Amino acid sequence: MSKFDHKLEQQRRIQQLKTVLRREFAHLTKINKSKRPWHLPIIAAIAISFPVFVGVYFGDVASGIKASLGAMIILNLPLAGALPYRMVTVMTWGFAMALCFALGLIAQQISALRLPVFTVMSFGVVILSRYYRQPPPAGLFVVMAGAIALFIPVTMTQVLAATGLVVLGSVFAMVVALLYSLFLLLTSPASTVPTFYYESDTISDSIIVASFVSVALLLAVVLDMPYPYWAAVSCFILIQGMHLRTIWVKQLHRFLGTLVGMGVASWLLSWGISGWGVAIAILLLMLGIESLVDRHYGLAVVFITPLTIVIAEYGVSMPLDQTTTRAVIEARMLDTALGCAVALGGGLTMRAAVIRKPLRRLEQSILKRFSSQT
Image 1 (tube, rainbow, N blue to C red):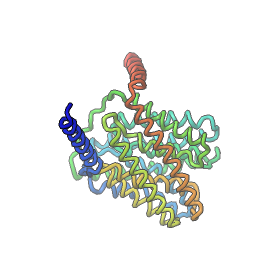
Image 2 (cartoon, one colour; image 1 turned 60 degrees about the vertical axis):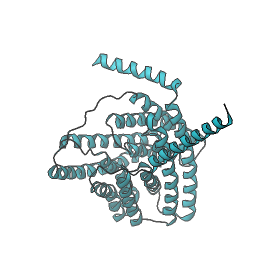
Image 3 (cartoon, one colour; image 1 turned 90 degrees about the vertical axis):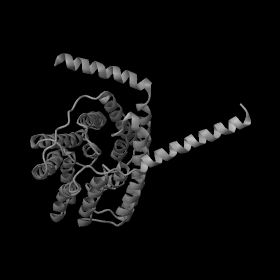
Image 4 (cartoon, rainbow, N blue to C red; image 1 turned 45 degrees about the vertical axis):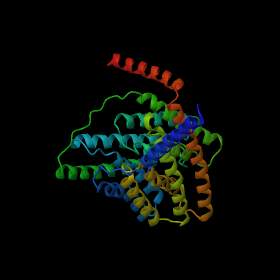
């Protein structure tokens, strides 16, 4: 090859690289048009923050936050189908939320049960989200509730009361979901319920996601991190919505969003907010999440990260002083770094044929056995 041809080849490769980078940058920065009603973020934010306002009024913010965890099932409200379908879906997620939280509280009493219970919990939430095509954040807050329950200081005698608060929040969300669904059905005709069918690799992907989220939790416990559940949650934020064809775009969205979100959380906690400030912060953060989640998930993660930190910290202790805030942010940064590293490993695993092939054989075996029994 002559020097001229070699130079032309170099220019061609550089041009191809520039084209790819421009295309990927445009994809990363693209803001999609929202397909949801403009008032949905307002309804969701009010439903989730209202229990916190009630808790502040009665001087028990921690209980209000536990109830707000249950109220987060309103995020799973379908915007298609008749009223029974919508309400059954919300109630199903309400049951999942209460079950995961209760299992987490019970498992923490016996340390050896924490990891296996969390693994099963994560697998169930992921496969439920995938099968019913739940949009992000899908089952994130259900997994978060279960993970937090594994480590918050609750005795066995307090399990029933704590779980009852979550159930109470879920019931409130169901009432709001019912009223809002009636409003939607009265103002617009009911759209057709999407056809649900088993999508290939659902079990395989769920196994990979649950395994790596559990690895993040295990590593955080082994390394004696003060808040091990946050490593699992940050890993789940990154990995839970991935599909093979969009893996790196999703990863970069969530990774950058998580990093920026840590800065927002640090700024928010530095204010030393308490009481009404916590309730208002949760209201505004939820409003931001629901306004952005279907436009640009990376931007939504900027608000998801501080929301999860506020819920986790103020759901246990109040208020946070400057020293505690600094320690929380430093610990969260380490936990987030660990969770992101594990999630990136999970992303690579999703593309590894050596892992995919045996998992697909296992999946086919399970499906054959299930179909033969039915």
